[in-house]
Structures are given as structure tokens and as C-alpha cells.
Length: 140
Image 1 (cartoon, rainbow, N blue to C red):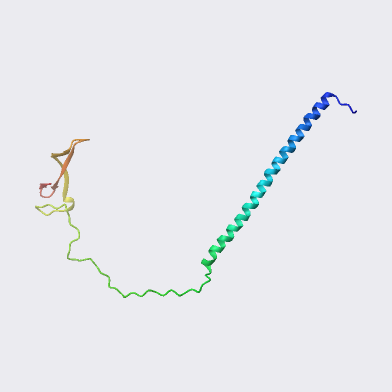
Image 2: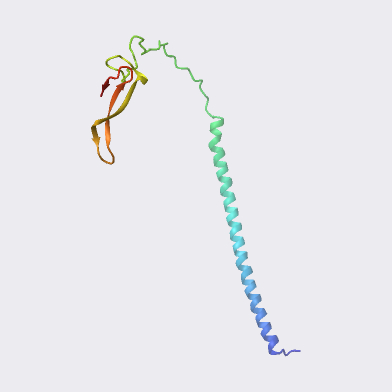
């Protein structure tokens, strides 16, 4: 039994090469796992350090270590409110008012003045004129 046939030796060589390849892959994956474990350990320690830093930063805000002084209100002399409203001054001036009969608002219409062309491009644009619907006066 000491002597093997060439087929057995050939399969034995293939299997041994496969075993060495598998061991090298196992070693590679173990190295990756240990690298990842080291990275996890490093990140968790960094995370805990950052959490303690955050707690140290927020602690003075919640409970100050120095004696607090009572805030004194700022006293200002009472002032009388100044009003700019003057009931004798008319605030709104109506620009659309008939100069002849004094009609205002919806009684005045704006229509195109076909005798006064402002622009030809891109289309004809006419000037506007105002017409009083009560007395039929036309002005610009």
C-alpha cells in the first residue's frame, strides 16, 4: 500500500493545493475580521469620549458653578405714545377724478387712445385716456 497510482497522487496534490488555498483564504478573512474588530473598538472608544465631551459642555448650561446674580429690570420712564394720525389731513388722494363733475372710482374708465401710438413692436401699444361715464368728458 505504500505505492499509489498516478491518479491518486494527482488527486492528492489537487486536494493539498486546495487545502493550502483555503487556509490562505481563512487567514485573509481572519485578518479582515480582526481589522474590523479593531476599528469597532476604536470607534466605540471615540464615541464614548465624544459623549463625555458633550456631557461636559452641556453641564455648565444646566447647573452653573458660579453664583448667579438676579437680573434687575431696566426701568425706563413712561412715555406717551406719539400718534402721527391727523384727522384733518386726507390720507388717500384719488388720482382718478373727473375734473368737470368730480366723479371718482368706478365712474372713471381707462381706454386706449388710438390717436397716440406709443410702440409698434412687438405689437401696437396705445396711450391711455380717461373717460368719465357720468358727464362723458375725455382727458389724458
